[in-house]
Amino acid sequence: MSQLADLRFLIVTGKGGVGKTTVCAAEAVAIAAKGKRVLVAMCNAKERLSMMLGSDIVGNAISPVAPNIWGINLDPEQAIEEYGIMTLKSRYLYKLLFDNKYVRTFLRAVPGMHEWAMLGKAWWHTTEKNSDGSWKYDVVILDAPATGHGLDMLRVPKVILDVVPPGILRRDAERAIELFRDPKNCAVILVTLPEEMPTSETIELAAALTDELKLPIGRIVVNGVLPPLFSKEERRVLDEQGDILCTSSGDAALLAGRARAIRERVQAESLYRLSHELPVKPSFLPLLFSEAACPAAIRELARRLN
Ligand SMILES: Nc1ncnc2c1ncn2[C@@H]1O[C@H](COP(=O)(O)OP(=O)(O)OP(=O)(O)O)[C@@H](O)[C@H]1O
Ligand SMILES: [Mg+2]
Image (tube, rainbow, N blue to C red):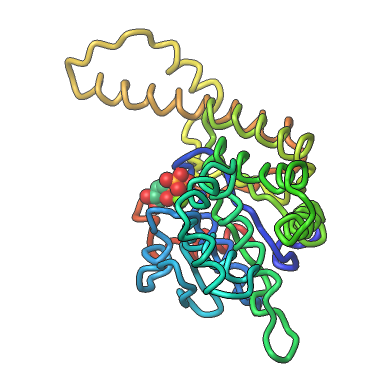
């Protein structure tokens, strides 16, 4: 597998709330520091990238967010319109066709149209060139939707190949799939937490991505890792404390210790599974005890990803 910074398209996905956008921001900072121009594309998200990188709010037009980093919050309706205008090569024709309410209703009903509008637009930005022939963005990072929706989105190009007759849409879907499946150009970054459910979901998601979609997995990021305070034996002793009636500060300390020991046990079990049941050795990001959605924290996480 090539270095992530040498690829053209990175797809970041994982369960809701595990730190996908945080990882997008940290990867963008790490890659931009190598002199690459990076575009982070979010999927109609409640936008938080600007807070993480210290910029103005990122809207549905590309805007700069940090040195060598740009952002966009993809709006599916607008992306469909742009795509329509681009493929019909005329705003007039587009309006003629799309202002027709039957056509609109039909388009909304096409399965995956919204997903393709966002995924296809993000992909399309990898094809943009400057006037000197260089890529406008060296790397596009897609902050993809959470697990189930992310998978649905990544399935869409294949659905287009299966059901759409030859034409521009099909040709673009073909080119996008070719890029997505090429480990020299694309990688999926899976983000997870060292907990039971996210671990099981990540292992299932990795299998679906590789077996069904044939997408290369470039990195597994285990986010929010706690520094262990207890040895295995200490964890066992604390874990076996049974019900503790909290009547003194000593009891409160014991309760807190037991809760932490249980969390550390679950983390150790999850890390073992993530290290043994996935095709790529995981990278780890620590749980930060200060605000993580700010540039200083993102820089620290970026350093750890390198
Ligand atoms: N390593 C960390 N340490 C502490 N807090 C973190 C860490 N990583 C992420 N967070 C915080 O956890 C919250 C969720 O992170 P983030 O927004 O990146 O998740 P997400 O997977 O993108 O969520 P969503 O599914 O809603 O898009 C944020 O407040 C973020 O600052
Ligand atoms: Mg997010």
